[in-house]
Amino acid sequence: MSADLELGDLKALKTAAKEEFRSVPGIEGFGIGDHVLRVYVRNAEVSKRLPRRFHGVDLEFVVTGDITAGRW
Image (spheres, one colour):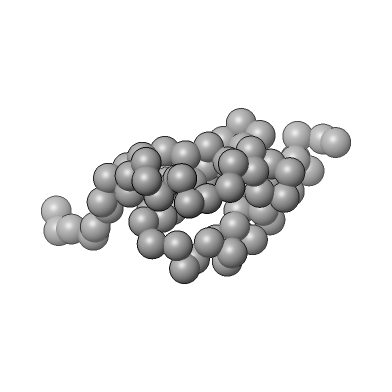
């Protein structure tokens, strides 16, 4: 599989993960890492409620704390 195809696959999986996990409180966002999907979570407890893999791809959890929009 080419690197571009892999990135395309990860982008599609990211979209699917957003849809599947949208109702889980404490998820702050999603990203793409080196052959992994990143899930940005408010705290480590949130990651304990989620699987370690999604459609065959590892999930990497990044604890962010609470993210809120602010004024600069």
